[in-house]
Amino acid sequence: MFVGGGPGGAAHHQVLVRIPFTDKRAEEILRDEAKQLTREGQGLIMIDVARASGGFQSWSALIERRLQPRINTRISAVCLFEGGMMPTDKGYNWLLRTKLVTNPNARFQLPGWIRDGVVSAGKAAEHIKG
Image (cartoon, rainbow, N blue to C red; front, side, top):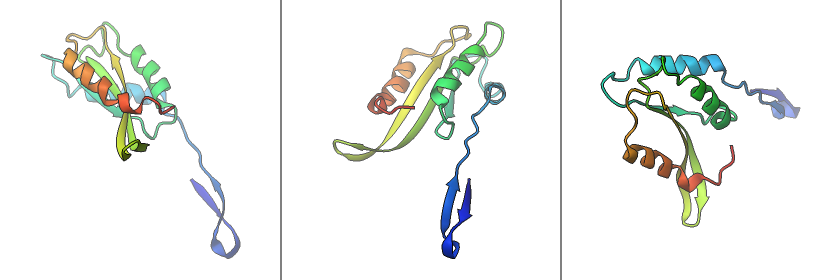
């Protein structure tokens, strides 16, 4: 972010540049996190995409391409999430937006109660566009 000076040193112009996360970064995150997962059970990776512009759409596609039959089989699913304070009918509340990307090629699939919990956590914020 760059802020140019105005009269009396006050901010006059502001420029914000967002650089999208790339395909390579998604691969690195999955590789590094997958190393920490057990080989004997389910593995869920959580990725906060709050600062990644368009993260839900772009990261979903990138992750799906990396869940292959011979690689990343320790990863049962990846949960993309972001959160923030949002106005609700009962005042402001912390709401999460979630997207669960399941791995059909995983050695072990996530139990239904975990899938349901991740999906329901994001239900209250479904109206948020991203």
